[in-house]
Length: 464
Image 1 (cartoon, rainbow, N blue to C red):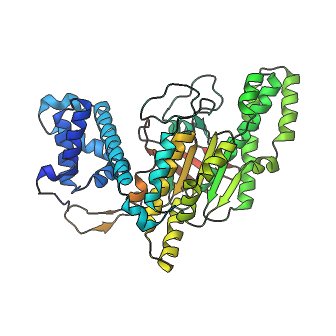
Image 2: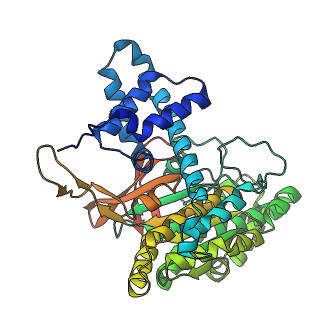
Image 3: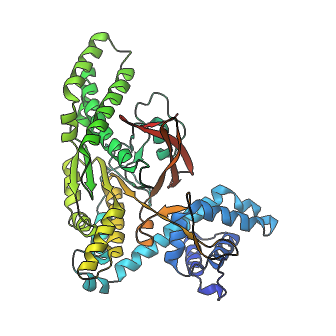
């Protein structure tokens, strides 16, 4: 049974936040504020942290609930229930809550003494402030407040190698004509890829890393074949492909994925240059065969094995990751696989030692990765496991829900970190092939959308 909050509505977190928003924005529809307060009352949301968790973890459900609540009210307010209006309102409240949340963390200086220098959630105070206060590397380009800024030389997206999945990840269902590689994981954003075991999380992120390396090499070769000095200078510096793992890498599978990516990129480049003279195409083909080898591609993949969230926190907060990324000219992909495993390893070690809470390290890692993605213009991808959702069915006792009712692991400490949340799941087996589904759950420019894919020896392929 749903629990209702019967206290004074003015004690709800949203009341103070909404008044604060009104003072900043000048005017917000009162009906939106009342609907949000009703939502907090019905779902027993008592703190700003709980409200922020609801808005970030399940924004579509919150939006649907608010729209239904407003339709039951006065009919003259129906115009305010348009999806665009609700979406803007929810995003504005989310940004305000996030700002207040960060400010509170920065003001809690006693935490620093409890956790020690360099570790714990308090250690992010100086690091995040330093990352976000530095001038963005945009070469004088104007930026919008609240938007992720990244270097102009950095590509907006990094492909997965599957066109339809790339369009979903980019928040666009249409590909501009004449584009070679469009869509994928966005630079300047922290993307969470979560799902059950066997859904293909690791293979998807590795495939993105390999495409990042191979396509960079191809861009240089194509520029040289066409005699394009501008393109050569833009791509000659290098690209970052960092793979931070909690466990050892399956070498045989890595080799298979590398060979599959090389073959697919070669095929796409051949289509792209098919209109050129045969002599030019022949030279380019020979250069690709010589340059794009499994060994040369894997040499570009930087693998770092970390044992716990505390070690990863030290790697980021010390500036080591930023220095390594900048050494590759500040463009590329950083993958953490998986954040749940790091949290688990950390909890085991903490239980054996000083009993410190691993949740604070996970929260600090999330905040620093998010700041790193924004400031450095990196496409940061983090894989996560799932846990079953404990929900109260109407009129019954609390029960564990089955398939389809899973949520990302690690709870509130991690949930507020990702900009974009992507869910992978297995659907059904047909003729010996398991169909899987990628769902973009939420993102700054993403509507909920999904697409199917299969996993073969050569890698992940979309069904479209």
